[in-house]
Length: 247
Image (cartoon, rainbow, N blue to C red; front, side):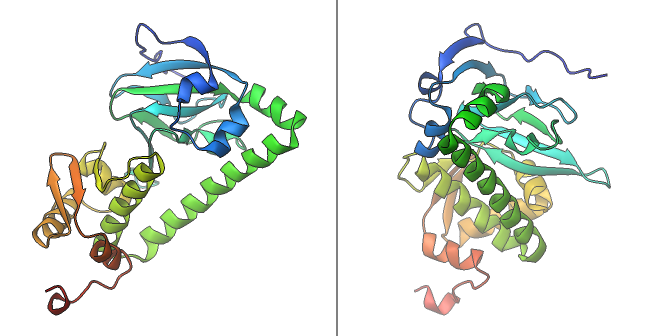
């Protein structure tokens, strides 16, 4: 039996809104074309609230309006493996379409506004509209590509390349939302980052300190400022620039 507690929501939570009202301008045009015209439910999660748990039946796709959702699962050895940190404009739960239940936990890392899109309505719309069906398949394809890149990173990259890639990835995703700056806030703890990258907390802290000492970035709490994208990209590609060439 599922013992999941009811999701804690704010006083304005649970209201029905149009998709355009729900996500405003944060989501991609491709996703807007899929969900346009659907009526959705908007609610707010507190920090630490579960959006869903592993084993829960799949009923909806969720689009983040603000905040961040961490999805994670336990490995066969009992270790936590973080699968993704989903940001505003991104969807959560789409990978459960085939198996009809969620295979991971989804938790809010901070107060997070979410739009719930019932999959039954979306599936009906896709059957009626080939263009929507195509766009939905593209979103599924994006999930597969992202998961493939993540597995390749864990399997073949050194620790410093993993951390550099993670920071560059967050920078790119924030820029896709229209934040054209190299300064952004990491919503997760360093332990969460370690669980995502397959590295210890000590390794994450050591590498972030090293990158800061080398002038690649600056860190104030969870706020990150990327100072040298070219050198950080070089680290991410396994070929750090020699010290003699940095003058």
